[in-house]
Image (cartoon, rainbow, N blue to C red; front, side):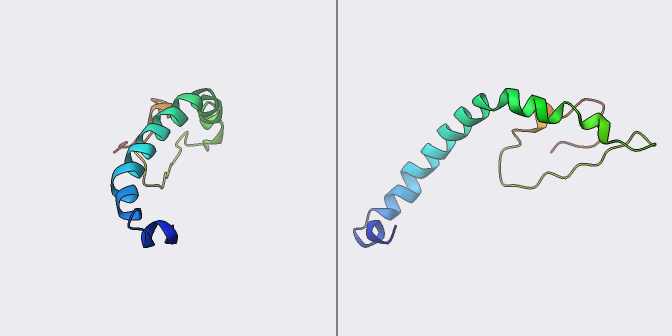
Length: 79
């Protein structure tokens, strides 16, 4: 990284190539992880208490790739 910055290439990589790479990688990763995410999110209903309510908190700077795996019975905004 330091060498690329010294050579004047890091600015180009950071602004041009890296966002493109990250966008492509994210799509491929999410496609490959669909079955695992379905498995992980399939048993959320087991974690509800007597009130049958479940709170969720998803932190991150992503595009909300996990939202489609939440069950429709879960209340709340997904935005």
